[in-house]
Amino acid sequence: MTTGTPATDTITKVESIDQIQEALGKRAYIADRSLGTALFLALRLGKPLLLEGEAGVGKTEVAKTMADLLDTQLIRLQCYEGLDVNHAVYEWNYAKQMLEIRMLEAEGAARDHALREIFGPEFLIKRPLLQAVEYTNDHPGKRPVLLIDEIDRADEEFEAFLLELLSDFQITVPEIGTIKAAQPPVVIITSNRTRELHDALKRRCLYHWIDYPSIEKEEAIIAARQPHAPQGLARQVSHFMHELRRVDLYKVPGVAETLDWAAALVALDQSDLRQEAVDATLGAILKHQEDVSKVAGGLSKQLIQTATAGANNG
Image (cartoon, rainbow, N blue to C red; front, side, top):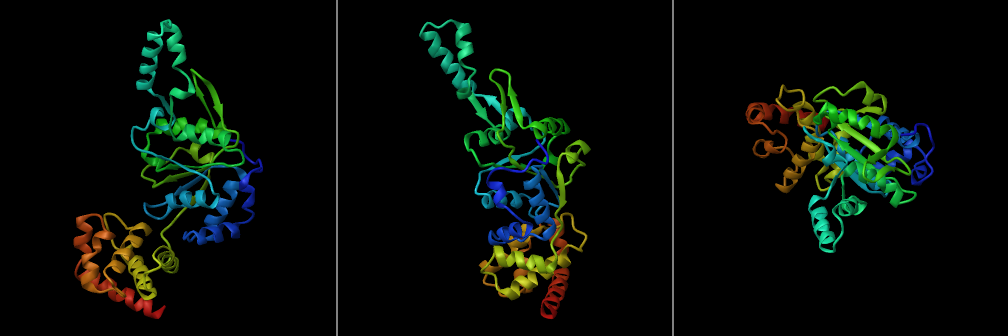
């Protein structure tokens, strides 16, 4: 990827950090200035943005919201152990190729000629990375948002393959040739930091850590994402979650769980935190029985009291 080249397409319409924050806010994503700055620089410098943070803090949502903001397509590559080129870049449609060979042979074509005929673009199954490379060629003036999600789940070998792609944004298909992006896509890479990423990958990216939100920010997120939640309930939930994350849990809940919980409480017509409803809905925020057992009962009562007092004082 070319670094430091000013964008010449719709990305230039994003003129300031304040504009990004405001635009994200209109799309119910509450971003602090540091994230707004990282996104602005990623667009201006044409560099991938690596977002790290605990699961559920809104990393993936950044890419979805940016695609909407830029009025472009989101192309998502979900990483997992064993991810290979066939699933990430391209593979041949073998069934279609075999059918074409039989048709050509029935027409009397020589076998070597038939083989040459079946290695064309129409037989190529394009996976996310190739889709992202070709997008700007088919949509002049627009760049897709390429989300490489949870890169830490992929093997180091795939991470190494990604280095070349992020440098040049071109893909070589031996039977067809080299396919190069007219303009590099907007790249957002996320990691839950289950393993350390290689320095070579980090050097190619801008970096931003998304932390758990403050009480005030989490309340604002609830208000934006769950507008039917009473303000008092949103304030109590944000205080409760802030205190809950201090507890020694097997898995600390993220903002995604906060929003699920707020939605569950609203569905139960709750206007504030009550012991019975809290214990009944802990499964919305805690995903391990050990954590549910630890929090339910005495600890949840204590957390409710602290959250209620904090909300009232706030």
